[in-house]
Amino acid sequence: MRKPIIAGNWKMNKTPSEAKQLVQELVPLVADANCDVVVCTPAVNFAAVYEVIKGTNVKLGAENMHWKESGAYTGELSAAMLKESGCEYVIIGHSERRQYFGETDETVNLRTRAAVAAGLIPIVCVGEKKEQREAGYTDTLVTYQTLTALTGLTAAEVENVVIAYEPVWAIGTGLTATDEQANETIGVIRAAIRSVYGDAADKVRIQYGGSMNPKNAHGLMQKPEIDGGLIGGASLKAEDFSKVVHFE
View 1 (tube, rainbow, N blue to C red):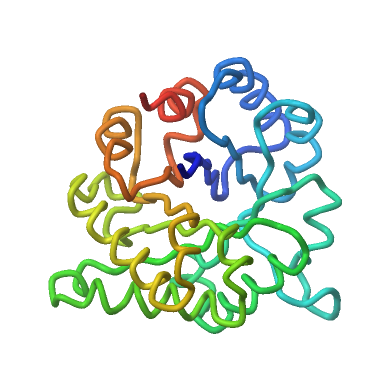
View 2 (view 1 turned 90 degrees about the vertical axis):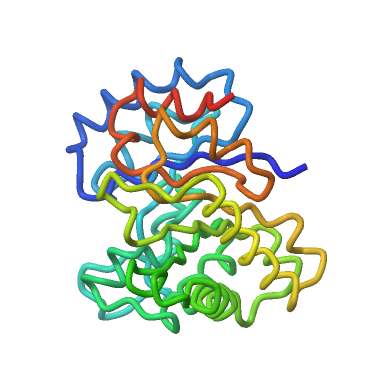
């Protein structure tokens, strides 16, 4: 059995004081969760958030990282910086990073390998745009993105990677893939992993990341291929996020 994982992606939201208040409200609401709970916050909030969640079942994640250990990369953060700040997870290749900041499948692979090497758990994002789905390219695209991201990892390493399927057309739009669409595409992703890494595919947790919220979380999480959610807007309110965490 794969343990579900619900991760919040705060994006560019919350100051340190706001972040502290949010996690103070969240911790007691999810203390009895039957899944892994992660909050991925802007780096300026790491200290404030970690102070509150340290010793609880809520884990800290980052929203991005660089693949180099150090160097002249102004504005970037290394895996070692994240780890010493208390991070256990890091989102890699989110569609907004790809769209606005030039992230490519190749740099997603570099970041994924660096995260794994440093002992972080990467949450690797893959997904198609609306026109790509309508043209019938979804399966081909997510297969390519997934296998490119994992290139260079061993099967044992792949087992600990989290994949987030996030249809780009459903992020921040209020649109959501149907439970069946999400389950089907996540099944394609798992089959792609199995084609290269064998039984490791059965241990890889694959989230749905397209506008999961308190209203649709239960239906999505009943599907056999879906192991959790990467939550955007609903993660910015403790009560909403806790309802997703308690998807049962």
